[in-house]
Image (cartoon, rainbow, N blue to C red; front, side):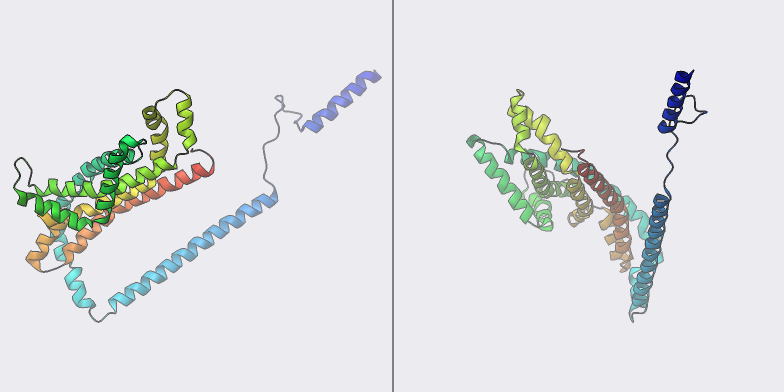
Length: 311
């Protein structure tokens, strides 16, 4: 009897040490309860976040009100309002600007795809090894240096106005196609450098490990190096596409009726500059979602890199 009593005492003591409830048949531990200090710290953080939000909102309102008073109180504001912010001409120009914007969107899609493909080919050509590829590396380096240094507006004038002057058989004189070609030539040089930076950022051990597994140089580049390079360079590539979206409006110098040219037609007829403001706001409204998406991708990749999720 004494032995049994001791065993039961020991069992009861073990149950208390394990923290298991007497009425819990599964023997599960009690749910986690935050300590008062942790709860107090979380309340302090929430209060601090609300305070920071309120201060930011207040400072934004004060700054906006000061700017409005500065602009509206200027001596020439009535004339400026009539010339640049006329509701009548804004309503007239808005449908025409939207109709021309469709051309800008098509140029963005077609030129963006062409720029990515051509830029990748140029970047790969610049990173080829071996003396036999030396002429190719020189040509691609000269291409990127030339078109990165040449202002886009001059490139557009040369292509859009100069190519038709040659009167070559079988060569288009469509300003949309020629303007898209000029955009592709310029932006492919920028994108090629972005891709090249990504390729060279991949550690040589990655290529060496692929070669040790039996992959050829081409297979190592395709399956090991390029996926890592492209993944690392997504944010700058998106930034280049945002810039391309804005610069599609420059094709209007050749006579293509895009959003900018549509606004220019209304301005030439009315001598009021409100259509330019309308076109600018339309481009801004189109650019902001792309910019915010770029920021989101950049922040997401930074978090993954900080956690060791990307190579």
